Image 1: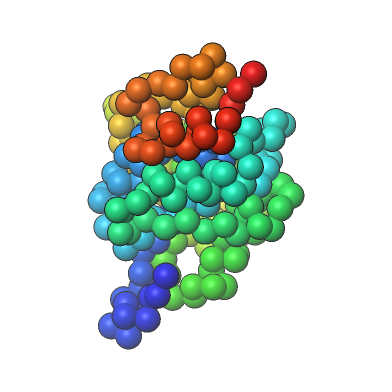
Image 2: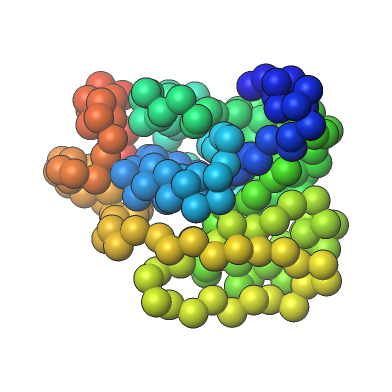
Length: 204
């Protein structure tokens, strides 16, 4: 990722950080990223697969390298999408503040937007060093159409809302279907069904 052109023009690149387990990544993830990118005129959306979510006790069913490979298949042809393996390579519990500091140090000219769902957004008060995190970026909150978002009481909080697609799918439902030998049609980006079968993922 090269921001030198924008920097030379005096423009701060607008970058969306989209963290998650992505176990597996599915079509709703991609549509959310596209909608946020369009609504906020982002130059790039970076998908960040985590090592271990601080809010989930279970470990991912697919390895970090497998989830990264699935993301690579999913975003093929999406010029403004990329993947950063920082959290997977770092290992341990993935805290958003540490990831945000990493990106701010690596790309100090960029303006960052943390992409997350309304349910996660409303729980920000429980996040590690949330006020420091809020000082570094703006939260891009995807919500169900016409649903209200309750903003948490966090000093210096900046956020914007983007309507999420009405797509009834989740990674957990996809894993459950795969465990029964049924890979759901229309839920997975092209090539992922073959990858899941080849790797023997999500079996009981």
